[in-house]
Length: 552
Image (cartoon, rainbow, N blue to C red; front, side, top):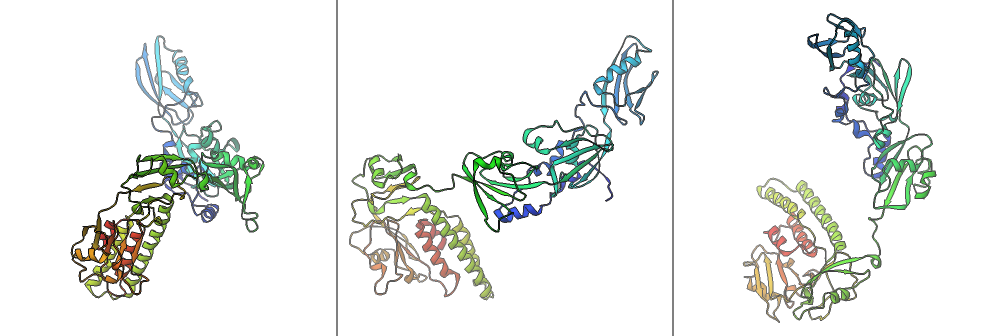
């Protein structure tokens, strides 16, 4: 194809195209993996190009087009000479004539000028610096992101020129890059040496009309999991899985170094993922298209009897605090470590918050919100939108969904305790990060929702829940009496659901009860779902205040 001169940074603004193997890896693993080294050629990599103020090294060979700043003082007064190396490699010094400097090392230039001027003058001093370097034209060919002719600084190296062309394409090699001059290979570069070892010994300064050839990509292997650098790596002939894992920085701190998983395209339709011992990776040749997964030790739940426990206990115990317990310890062991209960302990209100329960609640809560959103979207499509009232209700429902997303489940595990129990379920095995709170006995009953005066009322033994509802002024006209529910101090929720001949309001009130009266809703509209959402919030231990705020 025709080539044209380009600047040394244009190609760096292009994003590397995703190769077919990269797409396959993303589909197989469910996450994208980039080719190792591709970030070197993203926008911003132009910082690798030599700058205008780069110090010229002593071994730099002068070329036509370079500008020299020469100063001569002493018996000769010529302090500011600007001399350009012409196409024949010469500079012209006044009163001296032409001096051939092509190919001369910059470090030898001062001595060369001193010798030539010394043929006519005595007692003088020469200083020389490079004012401006000429550009050289190089050709980047093969499997480059943007093959073509590039004008680069005469201090540029093979790596700089490859960077100028945007690096290897999706089908280009990072490990087979050749610098050709006058038909001969000057050097062959493996970019992994630079990227992994910081080794530039195979890099070389380019010269005018040099050709850089980027070969086709070799065997590609994807490495994921517990390694220090997940990526797609390129293997040379004869390299093993151990070599590829070494390129990936080896296994990280939490890796399971007993075994790895490998997915081979050569037999994926027969075996799928295979497990191999870690120690054989150094003797296992890689195959084109391998996907290697290094397993982790931290994402595997250990049996309870093996888990070390740090538990917190507070409230009505003799010594509240954090306690380390041996694996398999029970609630009895935790209570004993805390010195036992105080006389004011209200066991029925004991709250056990557990991390594993919180995660389960979070999953259920998110699913409930998703279902609510789906129902809301469906009803938005099926219901008439002709009234302002309908639009307002839809908007309000969406606000509620947004607020629900801000709620976090507490992870409360409802214990099987009756109000008259004098002991806790001591045989319950504790888990790491458990928090056990034992309150004193509440003195109030709470009433919230569609009532005339929500608040807390002094508990009186022997009175029913209906009595406290009457104290709040009873239900308002907008109340849905059939959906009233009660949250007990132990976290349990009771309602009229599945009750045929009695009402929850006829139940004896217990210390710490909270009565909630939902708002009545239009049949078939989203507000019916809102009552269910409120119940879910209570069941997940998110707190009465959340529901009161959301439904007012």
